[in-house]
Structures are given as structure tokens and as C-alpha cells.
Image (cartoon, rainbow, N blue to C red; front, side):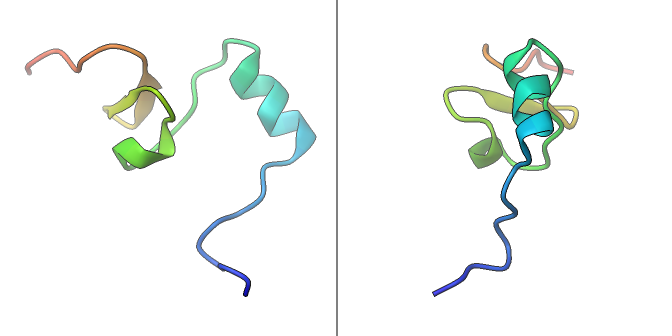
Length: 49
């Protein structure tokens, strides 16, 4: 079974994410161990806006 919603990250994208670059997101589940604030993964609670 292939899930078309999940796109495999290329090696370059993974390096960008792991290298401290900001990971873009739309949902909290896209950020393992973190949360999605203003379309960017953060590893703390979102500040109240």
C-alpha cells in the first residue's frame, strides 16, 4: 500500500531540516517532537498571538 499523501524526503531536504534549517509545515504532526507555529516547526509551545 502506497500512501500518496506522504512524500519521501530527499537526502538534501533531510540535511536541511537536520542541519538547523527551519522545517516548513502545515500541521503539528509534521513536526516530530515539536509543534507547527506559523508554518514553521518549533520545539517549544507556540507563543500566544
